[in-house]
Image 1: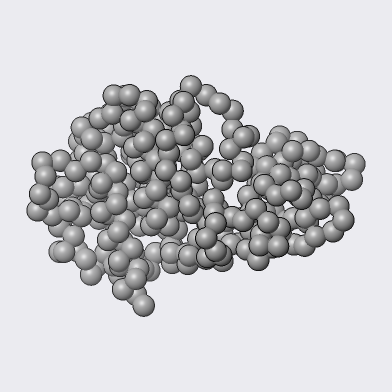
Image 2 (image 1 turned 135 degrees about the vertical axis):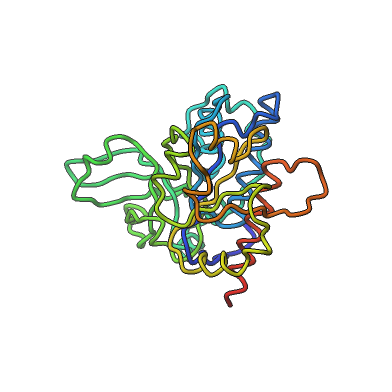
Length: 294
């Protein structure tokens, strides 16, 4: 860790949706793993709140979920993720370096940040205590009126309250309680289709497509909508089928269910833009819109 840092949150929750065939250009597990590492970096760099997966064919949703779950988990907690065949090449993943992953290993420094992720290792129901591994030499202790809720060992997000002779006192918190950006989270549920995802999401919905309106023609109206929204969804298509193709295959009109369909890379200089390249381009423009608010 280079020093304490607290990147500000976006003024809205940013959700990024990808199809389960986003890896269809890659032929090997090694290549697929490396591509997901780049996608995870884009999500963290541009402060996405959550990544969503919707089903397409070929369906590699389980592979995507396993690798992203592993990559988005802080390094000191990866030991609690069961090793699966899909994780063979996770050693090639680039370090995420989000605040969640760049935490100090000394208690004095950890207390300055206050927030940390942990894993429930033991439940003392009769005492109302939960023991939590927070990646420090000191053990974490969380008092709760409902210790039975932690019988299933799980990951938790906690706030460090102080230190006693027993260990570090913790309180479970929600990511919204953290005053700065933390990391992208993975939605464990896989949406059955693009339409199911779009139909359920109630915030601002933005589709990315080379057949959408050029970004410069909607820049001002998009920025106005963006900065007045609480939740924003950015949807990406697959290498061999764009969002209009997917919508047609599923039997609905894309333009009728999204607020904007935008070509974020007008006059592109290459025949095709890869999914991970499009993600950097799109999210950087949205980030610029947020910066221009100042």
